[in-house]
Length: 125
Length: 362
Image (cartoon, rainbow over all chains, first blue to last red; front, side, top):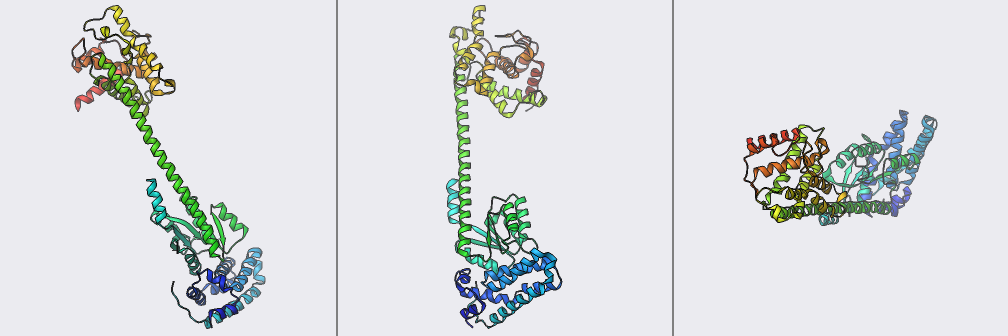
């Protein structure tokens, strides 16, 4: 799968995203690939399971920033919803955390499977 | 020095410190700035603090994430401010958390600007670079001010030296008229300084002179006899004893000196001339009130006038004059103590003894 195909599937605005890497496609692909081994989503899952409010906020916040920088806007928005819920509702957010996590997890899984299909571009900084 | 600074900022790239726990976020900022700037990276506030506190790194700006393990962005800012770096190195918060609360905390802690993730490289670059430019300009300006300050200090010193040289030259010229060597005024000035320092050492509370004050009084002492310019050669250079009338005229050199000093514009605002005026007028007063021109006694005579008068007498005794030969130091001291040259403040005589003892030892 080419970058533009993957971009279409993931809803990435490639022009905007590539500008953050000075137009360097290889570098962009390298960092998209890094998302596959990034532990932040697993940390979010664990934090939710532990009902650790501040850990949930931290992990969701981190994922929100990274995915936004990569142009993965859908994932970023889902993470932002979790951050928002934790901040405004506190522990009450756990009342509907499963629903929030489920939609986030779907987006994340879809992203990972598409990234696994992605052709490896040139790498190197 | 100013030139040096200019060259340095033009040739050396500014170093930007990027602080974020996520590699990808650092990479994006690195891409944004690496063409025109040196980049250093830190994964958390602790690492960033170590880098920024090392002056060798000379960090020009910090791009700071807030949420990080080990030490977060706000705690970094606290340490950064405690180290006195706040306001000296611009800090930009780069955060996905655009809430009013954290932006307010950031600004309250002195950050220059808050940039939201996802970043738009063009805007981040413009915002960071305009602040860097501001800081560069400010640094150059403050360097310039410092250079000018140094120049003014040098000029001030130059003026002071010139002033001193003029005073010494004119005073020496006047001394020449009475057939004395030009070294008399220098010796008086030196002895005055030593006596004042010794008095201060003996009783720091009573004689609390500052170094500057001692310097001014020692310079003023040079002018103690300027009034002699108004005394005719016949009296000034008479080898024998003066008649009563001649002595009365001779005594006017004190008041005449003051008249000359009064001609100096703004002399009253200048401490040097105020000391000189007092010394001119009162360096022939005596502790028992039997001196001239005003017959002041004891503490009525200023300490500096007393000091110059004992220095003057001691120097006159121990050096050759037109009307007398030089007297050995010990004999001169005995004469002063016995009141052969008028009465002096006992504390001053003690100070003179200390100085002479110290001289004899070396």
